[in-house]
Length: 136
Image 1 (spheres, rainbow, N blue to C red):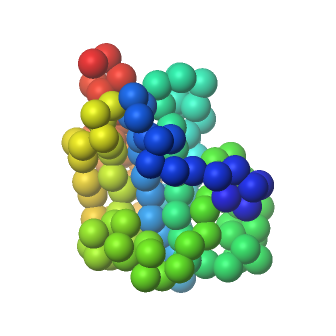
Image 2 (image 1 turned 90 degrees about the vertical axis):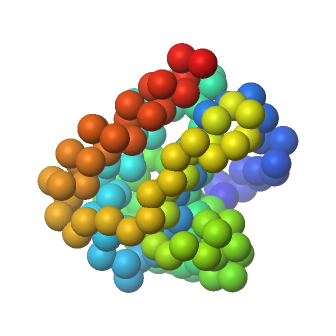
C-alpha cells in the first residue's frame, strides 16, 4: 500500500475480506467513495474483518483521492492488468466479499453515479452481507 504495508494470500486466512477495485476517472467508482469509507470505519476495529482497495492509478492520483474524499482506508496501487486479473476482468467498480474460508460470498460490478443511491445500496445490501459473514 502507499504506507508500505504488504499483503499476501495469508493475509486473507480466517477473515472476512472486503475488496474494492476502482480508478479515479470512473464516475461510479467515485460515487462509492463515501460509502466505502463508512463501511471501512464501521468494521475496521473488528479483528475478523479487513478491507482492501486496489487501483491502477498512480500514487499522486491516489493521494488526491484520499485527500478529496477524506478516505481512511489503505489503497494499493497495482497495474491495470493485475486489477483486471484480480477482479475477474469484470470492470469497475468491483466489490468482492470473501468469507473466512477464502471463498467469494458476494460480488458487485458497476454501480450508480448518485452517491445517495450508492449509500442506500451499501446499507441495504453490502453491510448486511458483512454482518452475516462476521456472525459465522
